[in-house]
Image 1 (spheres, helix red, strand yellow):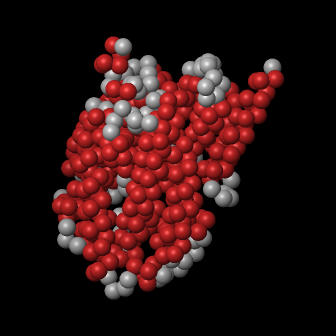
Image 2: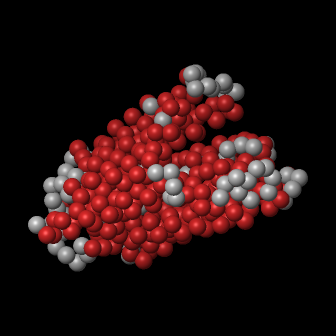
Image 3: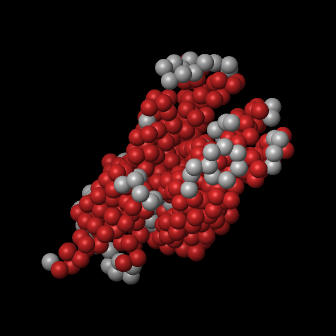
Length: 414
C-alpha cells in the first residue's frame, strides 16, 4: 500500500482505481504521443510518391494495421493496469524481460536525443542565424539542446501527471496552428491540393506507402501499455488509442506532405517560416517534439527501472542526460540505426499480445527466462530487417509469433 501512495506512476504494480485518469486526459496523452515530428518526413515521402487518392488510401490501410496492433496493446494495458515491462515479465520471464526493456529503452532514449536536435538545429539556424553542419555545431546550438533536454527530462521525471499537463497544452496548440498553417500554404499556392499532389514522378505503390505509414510509429506504439494502463477501462484504452493514432498520425503525415509539395520543406515548421510566422513556428516545433520526447523518456525510465531495480525517476534522469549529451551526434549519425532497431520492437508487442490473451484467467507464473519469447524476438527482428517484401514489421511479427507458438507447444509436451 505504501508503494502505491508514493509511486504515482505504479512502476512495479498494476494501476489501481485511484490512479486511473479521465477519458479526456487519456485521449490527450495518446494524441500527444502520436504527434511525432519524424512522421512528417514520412509524409514528405508519401507526397513524392503518391497522388492524392493513393496518399489517402495509404493512410487508411496503414492506419488500420497500426490501429489493430496498438489497439490490442491499449486494451491489454488498460485491462491489466500493467506497463510494457511488467507485461514482459510475464511473457519473457523476470530476467528475460530485460531484453525487451533494454531494446525499448535504447531506442526511446535515442529518439529523445534526436528530437532535441530536431528542435535545436533549425531554431539555431533561423533564430540565431548560425551555420550548422554535420561537422560543426556552435555553442549556442548546444545550449539550446541543453535547455530543451532539461525541460523535457523534467516533464518525464514528474511522470504521468506532467505528461498529461503537457499534452493538454501542446495537443490543441499543435493541431490548431499546424492546420491553419497548412490551409494558408494551400491558399498561397498556385494549385489546389489534389492538383499539387499529382505533380512529379509518382513511383510509390499504395502497399509500399502503407508500409511507410506502419513503420513510422509501430515501434513507438509498442509502448502503448505504459500509458493506457491509466485508462478507466479496457474499452477506453482501446478507443483512445485507435482514434488518437488515426488522427495524430494523419495530421503529421498531412503536415509533412503539404509542406513538401508547396514549399519543399520537411515539416510544418518550414511552412510557417515561409508564411512569416516564425515565433509560432518555433512554438509548434517545440511543443510537437515535447509531447513525444517526454513519452519516450518516460518509457525509457520504466524499462531501465525494470532492468536495474532503481526508481523510474532516477532512470529518467540518467536517460535524459545520455540523450541530451549525445543528441547532436545521434541526429547526424544514428537515425539509420534507430530505424533498424525499430524493426525489433513489433515482435515484442505481438508476443505480449499472444501471451496475454492465451493466458487470460490463468494463474500468473513468472519464469526466469522464457526462451521461446527470446528466440521469437531475435528471429523476428532478423527477418524484419533482412526480408524486403511486404511490411517489415508484420513480417517480423509473424515470425516471432510462429517461434513463440512452437516453443509453447514444445514446453507443454514436456
